[in-house]
Image (cartoon, rainbow, N blue to C red):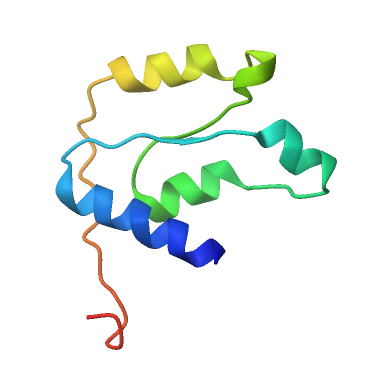
Length: 85
């Protein structure tokens, strides 16, 4: 099921020139022992990825900054596996 969310993100990236991904509920993930490498995810997707915990007001300023920033970086071309294409 987790992979379906990433497919949705990839579809959004294909449709939008500039995309920012906000991964919310990081506090809940940590409680369950789930750690995410947001820098690696950003690199792999070719877009800014910001971690947040809206309930604890963490990451909100970083999200605003990412949304306001102009990106000169070319986004990755999305290539799916043959089964998906």
